[in-house]
Every structure is written in structure tokens, then in C-alpha cells.
Image (cartoon, rainbow, N blue to C red; front, side, top):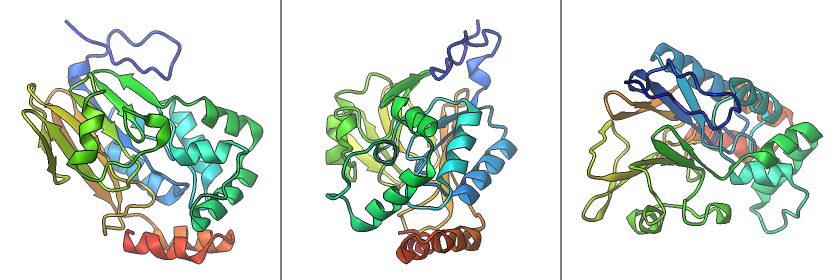
Length: 262
């Protein structure tokens, strides 16, 4: 008996001949307009026999290729959830209460995007269930409030709203695993075997702006058959990304921080 992968991003029926047990799914997010990092991740994923993709949001913001990254993800037609930078870049609301560097990048990003691209970002859902797992950019309890999960205590609220064994998220740019069985524990971002009697809330890290001290792009591969989650780090053309940031007139610190993974 086969189970089809249900891509909620599509309106046509799923391919009923595709066996879920053979699926390897790349989950990636917090691209933040870093085209070199995105292309490096997608190239690496293809080499790992990935056959499905899911985007965790924050396609735009901070870096210099918002249009190219948005169109690259759109062309993939994969399940995608909305990030806070996607929402801010596609709106007209004030950014006065935001960090000045992030606000400057978003103001610049707004000028790059066309009306149709902004509409596409606005239409993205906050939460999606894909196959046997859930995806959200921030948290399941209050996804539109953009709360950060930085420790196991933050993760506790999320688990009350998690109805699948597995949920992937982003937002902090720090890869991490939270697991709930008899209690909630925090685990390092290492290869994981999913156990049926536990729930997992997994941060996939950041493609375009990691903040865990490692500048390399980060994403995960979920192997459905093996019930495994693997974190992968990928080098990319950092110098080109930095040059583009400076050429666009974006804040210099944005070019500096990606080299430090902060």
C-alpha cells in the first residue's frame, strides 16, 4: 500500500503512484535574499537524492537578491510558509519599531519587489501540514506573533499545539532539536532517528544568515523511510554575496555578519 506525498502548495491531485516511504525531503528557510547560499543548498540537496522540498519562510530581507530568491522558490512550487520578513517586505506598514539595520534592508527590499511578488508573499500561510509533519516559521501556538524559541521552556508552549510527531521551524537561525516524551529536552543539531513515542520540534537553521557561529548555509533532510533527520552545512560563494550587499548600498554590517555566522 502506498501513501502519496501531499503538497498543500498545489491545487492538482497528488501523484498517487509516489510512495511516501522512498521520500527524502529537504527543508530549508531563512534564505534572506542570499542567492549564492540558496543555490549551493539546492545543488547539495540534489546530490543527496532529495526528491521533495519545503521552504520554512523568510525568503527575503537582509541580503541583496530578494527577487531572484523569491522567483527561485516560486519556480520550485514547493510547500512554503510565511516568515516575518516576508510579511514585512510585502506590507506597507511602518518599520519604525524594528531594528534599524533590518528596517533599512526591508525598506530597500520593498522597492525591489513588484506588486505581484508582494501579493504572492502575502498569500503564504503561517502553518502547513505536509505529509506526516507540520511546518511553521516561528511557533505553532502564536505563529503571527513571531515568537522565538531559544530554549526548552520556550518550546513547551509549542508542543501543546503540535498534533503531528514532527514539526519543523526556523526564525532564530540556529539549528536545534526539541523533543518531548515524558518531559521537554533540548538537543544539539545532529543526525536524529525519530521515535514513535515522542514529539519533535526541529529548527532547520538558516540558509542565508546562520547565527550559530558557523557561516555555512544550513538545512535538513528528512528521510521518511529511515525516519531520520540529518543537518547539513554547505559552503557557498561568500565573497560574491558580500560584494552584492555593498554594491546595493545595504548596511555594511550585513556583509560582515554573514562571514561570522552571527
